[in-house]
Image 1 (cartoon, rainbow, N blue to C red):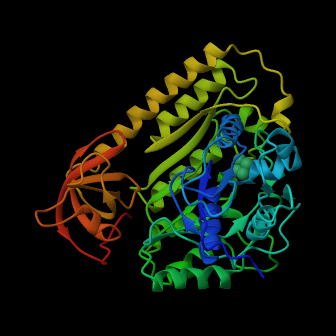
Image 2: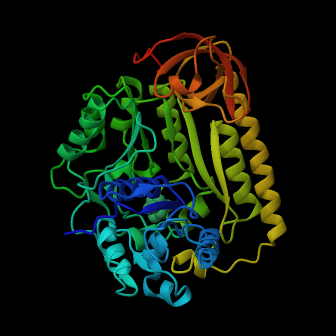
Length: 462
Ligand code: SF4
């Protein structure tokens, strides 16, 4: 029997990827289900939970700093217990386990990526004065599907379909901390999607480290394209997914971009490098040509598809020629968006032992050159939408002006538009409006609402 947390408050600090954000929503759902109240700041919180990511080194430093700074933070007025309970979960919890409580003795709970469901029990023991609570499992026994979720927006849901990863890209720590890939059954995923549709959700994003290999661990099971069909069949208005490994993107999935009603015309397909030599050193298991072939097929299936990518600059041993190959690939593809990263070494990965003597300034110069190109290409891709009317799923008022709504187009572009007299951007959140695009900037489109069409979804994309 769990202690109820009914007089207690909690806040969650999330670092890293969407998978972590989703895990945070599940934790919020569990703690709320036990009566605790979610608050925004650590000052107001009796329990602070950190959901961490160890993909980038900066996250370790940030975590240490933030946990340390809680040590002397005064308790809120009327605090339910005499001290603040601090928990660290996610990748850093999984990787470092007990070591964390040695470095940060005022930390109460450490949990891993496979046992979110144990958090309330561990918190309860810590509150009961049972000392440091550390529980890190090697792998998940079953897919954790029965945890409640508190969603950030009522109209959008993230739906995990796989956990873990089998790929071992040489720079990546994920397979070591999230374990081998496990797929959730199609029935479970579809049942959750249906429940979301019934609850008024307009957009579902399927999540996995590599959604394209969905079902390969289940004998005779449906594959990712079958799953897309099944989710489309629930009547969801908008369907997206992340992340897609190029080596596993099948013709069946590509084809769905041209045929499935709900599948939005936008794909994040991380290339990481445009050089075959570096791709091999990264253990990505595709070539530049194969990647470009995929892009050609996608554009054939869905001519207006918006493409985005991740690129690492300065992988150990990257030469000027390798970088040029990446630069030319970005020129050729013309992405709507690219997330660029300077390589950072993660201990415990094979790439960490590759020696590299490339000066930091050279890598920085390459990075800056690439960012300039990415911005030019993003601006160029958006120009093709000028004058068009796009359907926007409204997220609320823009940060700068409450009379301007902000939302997302089918191609996942941010769209700003002035709301009509008598309407409030906040009230439109979660509904669809049509916006005529008057201006196309690098990172957003700006336009005018032409009619508000609650609940309906016009034809988009392909
Ligand atoms: S596909 Fe590669 S980069 Fe992505 S999580 Fe797996 S190992 Fe890491």
